[in-house]
Picture (cartoon, rainbow, N blue to C red):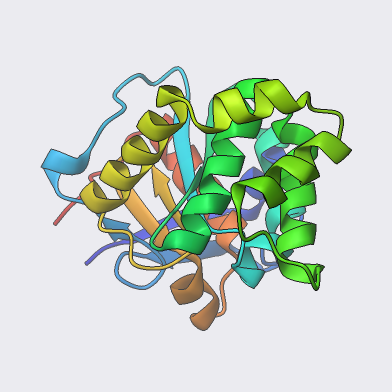
Amino acid sequence: MFALRWGSVACLLLGMSGAPAVSGQSVYVEGKHFETLSDRQRSNTDRAWTDVLQFFTYVCVTCRESDAQLTRWANAAGSRVRFSRLPLAPDGETRLHARAFHTAAILGVLDTMHTVLYAVIQDSRSPLESESDVAELFIDNGVDEYWFHTIFNSVDVRRSLDYVSKLASTYEVQHVPTFIVDGAVRVDEERVQSNNADVLAVLGFLVRERDNPIPLGH
């Protein structure tokens, strides 16, 4: 096990208002705040940016609560971070939601529909239970009915579902929200919070250390 250290000034440079206010340095420890993945699971070696993946579901309350702050964090990091949300689909309900996510992404309306999907799925007394329910929601938000059904049932959406499923298996994702940093480090938000740390501070710390390589592993 090893510890990684990051001064609080770097938190501000990455726009992390949620970083813990401490004197000196913040210490994030492998096995406590993050886990290093095996060599076979590592992916990005291009140091022009850092890949940060978020595995989530629309039924996850924690995912929704942190979503706006996560978006601000990613925007503040700019070109240093390539951030992607990946919807898990472990059952029929979440698979329907994930298909809606990928459909919105392909149609170019994800910025609008992402927030709408969270609100309807978690707040509405009429949850999304079928393709027709999802279609009605998209149509109400300006999407053409023909194009919705065409994309929703497309090969591209099926491939996106399979891709996310394979990544989740490769990275051994057990909970949501879970973050993967450059295919090398896994951050489980539930574990981070149980250790009284802020997940955005941990992510920002790992991004900065990615710019200045650290000895990942034992």
